Image 1 (cartoon, rainbow, N blue to C red):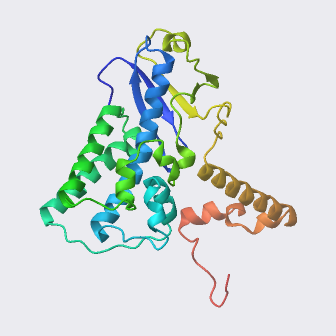
Image 2: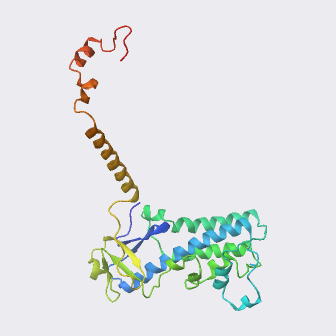
Image 3: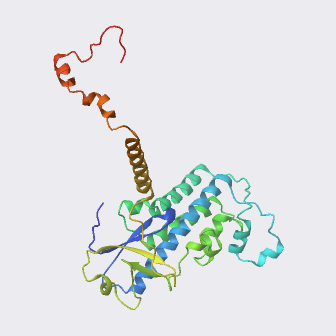
Amino acid sequence: ICFKSIMVVISVKESGSNGGFLFETTTNTPNDVLISQLVSIHNLRLQSRLVCDAVRQLAENGPMKKPHNYSEKNEGESSENIHAKSISDMTYKEHAIEPQVLKTLLKTVQDIDDYTDKAQYQKRIPLNENAITDKLANVRGAVVMAFPMGLPEWDLAKVSLDSSIDGLKMTGVANEILDPCTASLWVAGKEFQRTQLVSDRLGKNEKTKVIGKLTKAGSGPPVREAAVTEGERKAMMAHYFKRQEDLKRLAESNEDDYLGSSWADPKAMKRNLQGVEQIKAPGLQF
């Protein structure tokens, strides 16, 4: 799949299971706007991952029961705090969903899961912030259809769908959330200055494609990736170890050991041509 539009393509690489994503921009875009857009997509992908997991659990098991550590004094707390306290005490209550509504619910979840999946990065399909927001709205609407009476405040699906990005800081992706106002974008070991334009860093060629990384404020440039992958490193170590064993074996063997090999027999070719190579004297074993 190739890009139809002529735009600057930012390939944002991320650590862990997120993989990364592609984003299209222009050379006259302010870096401050670009960084905010990239951070928004990054955070929305994290939210989408939470939503997919929580809603699938909701569809399979029903709404969460009231946690044991939830009491009247929790009523004044935010849903994010409640979520953080109850995440280790997840029990569910049965709730029957009509088959067609359930099918719609799971379809909307799969839709946003596919759109934000790292496979899009491998297929070279750029992401769009509005598209992710719309797909989250579709999931939210499907949840309302499946549970018209609403979900309890402590339910993971409600927390992940209704929380703002700041609210997600109380969830399991807290360490991965980035601030659009302070995050940094790095390309080829150099930081994008927010006061400049994309063209100041990449030039005015709209066909430019670069690999970038987002970091938190003050964390400095990202660590350079290893020249070889973990799988390649293991393969190289296995080859090196095998080579060392072969050399050790050769060093310990006698210098004339090769004389016993078939390839060292000067009459082997003659016998092979005469067709008598496999003929052996009766009673003799080789």
